[in-house]
Image (tube, rainbow, N blue to C red; front, side):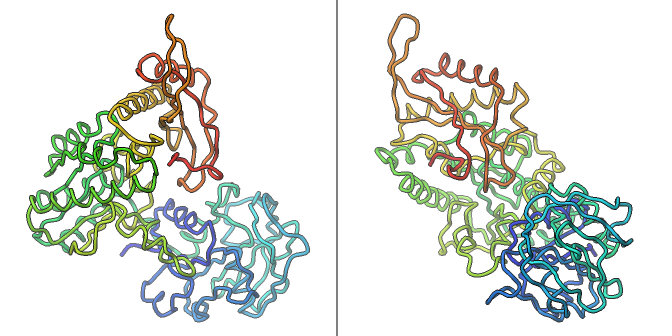
Length: 512
């Protein structure tokens, strides 16, 4: 049986980071609600529990509280920041606002030997983010490390195997944090490092075969990373029982349809049903400038085309989606979370409830970086596995204002140049996203001896870890120059290129 570490989520912005760090140790981790009953946690047979940080004070009204019986369950526990303050208070200690809040970099001084700091030096750089601090130790605990503002920066009860950290070991700003987590997960908890993408593929294929039997499975294939890896994994599991539907909405990147047909139809040889609906989408979008109206029109027509295609394929019992673990754990978060409802069918364009399918979600245990590794393991080409994110509505939200065939052609060519030059210069794999946007702005230019009055293209290149925040990339000026020169020389209809130097927030990555 695969070892697992359960992470109780108390609302920290770093909870997902903890889960990913544990998985980097090749140990399966799972995020659960902070108030999951101790009996349920024990039934899952975890090797250890990690109590995450959180924005609340342990004394605040309505502060999230776990089932107190977890401290009597005999399972090793690591409390991080709020998690440490929580059991510090509950087990007889005292927590109070610190004389000075600790945010940002700090120094840790390890004063006593502990398995938590095995093979680590006595002084460590750490990252703090807290206002409250432990003022009195609970019975059975002793301090093993101090910080500049806290005599109880790290505490332990070695008998009950309960450990507390006042800082965040999971963030990159704590350079030796992975070693601390490793000492807890592999050393104290004794978890086996048996979570690998090869073992995941084997177990998932078996689970899918058990779930669907001999039934047919449908998948809306977009060509993006998630649906592509889901298709490859399902095809390995059930072969020709899988039917993929690719809707060409006419809003795709240059050569997208041909690439999908080549990789999945001819290379992987799965059953691919292509729907050529570009003319219908374009007609419905004529004269529409509002981005939300564009999205709704595209979503509605996609649903209709997908439904029509499913009828041609024949009756199917199962619908597959490329749902990832971050989508799943939104329902774990504290309080009501409408995002879980909004995203319930985002991978296939918001399919209506009257489509009666049982869901198959082979990637629902994985983070994005793990999905890419699975894709590589399954033999998908690099240009599919490591491609940049692309919006569901396609180029429709990268053309500001109304869309027409001419503008789509202009943007396709400009965007293709951006990707070609980023790849040629070795920048493509270094950034989160790089693409072109077409503005409804014309300006005067000179080409040869003639005056032009053409469109403006925007170059957008950002770096990010998850798309939630992003910063513009300080791209090499020579690369910028080549991209701008090629677009203005090779793309008829553009005479000016500008570079977007906005971060998210306040801007978004996409323009619409």
